[in-house]
Amino acid sequence: MVNKRRELLFAAMSGAAFGWVSPSSAVAAGQSAAQETLDLWPGNRPPQGRGPDGPEKVSAKGSVTQVSRPRLIVYRPAQPNGSAALVIAGGGYAHIERGSESTPTCLWLQAQGVTAFELVYRLPGEHWPAEAPLQDGQRAMRVIRSMAGRYGLDTGRIGVIGFSAGGHLAGFTAATAAVARYAPVDAADSLSSRPDFAGLIYPVLTFMPPFDHTHARREIVGEHPSAEQSAAFSVDHLVTAQMPPVFLAQAQDDPISPVDNSLLMFSALRAVGVPTEMHIFPQGRHGWGMGKPGTLVHAWPDLFTEWAAFNGFFKPLSANAGDRPASQ
Image (cartoon, rainbow, N blue to C red; front, side, top):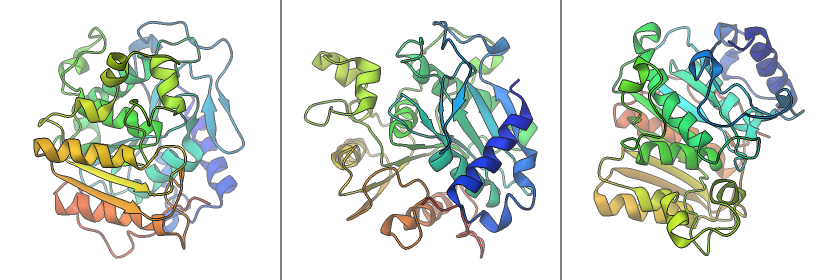
């Protein structure tokens, strides 16, 4: 198990570095001190690959590389309401933007009574196979379900939220839950890896031309994949009627992940009858995390929460639910 103190220091460092407006003092009230860390694989023995040569690194902005111990960081609310979410930061499958994406999102969810599980996943360029993050995503959902009794979770209200390449991992996990990505390692692997809902925020979803210039595509299928390889990892090509309800949010001027990723995904979901809500903001670009106050994209967390509450995944918003960490 990763040192709990290290994770607490990371949360404190991230909050200070980004000047977050904390969810009514989710941090000050000591809620982050209730964090736990769960190894994703028994004995920290992930399938395949030897992993990075050196210790894990965290940049001044909270970006993580050199991941040798894939894990879940648990944010337990003071008053849990039974809902839970796996939260996955992006970074092009080359690094993990915990500081600007997954950590503030987990703190915001925690303040609303949602038990949040932050995923630190393996990166293909660090002597892990391209399949490694996809295995970690599937395994994470099963581990969370196996912990439902321990954390007081409603097994019909466990979802996933992903940003950028983390949106690809979240969408891929939701779309391919029926596909075994690794041999079972314990009883948790008898459980479903299908999330009950998915929030995909400025996601990278397609690896197909002409939208195939992302770092995520290069890390997963290489520089010169065949059309069949690209399609096999394009989430919009993998959609079935068994997908959970999906929430999409993206900016029209996104220079990294073209807005077509969300448009293609919406069309694919609509074609098979999967309930979907999509918000396209005229401005916002990429990597906005929780959204800077005063920007259009700052609206997405409240829109997401209202959508989740309307569909029965979250309890209705409280009076102060809009208080949340803000990305700068």
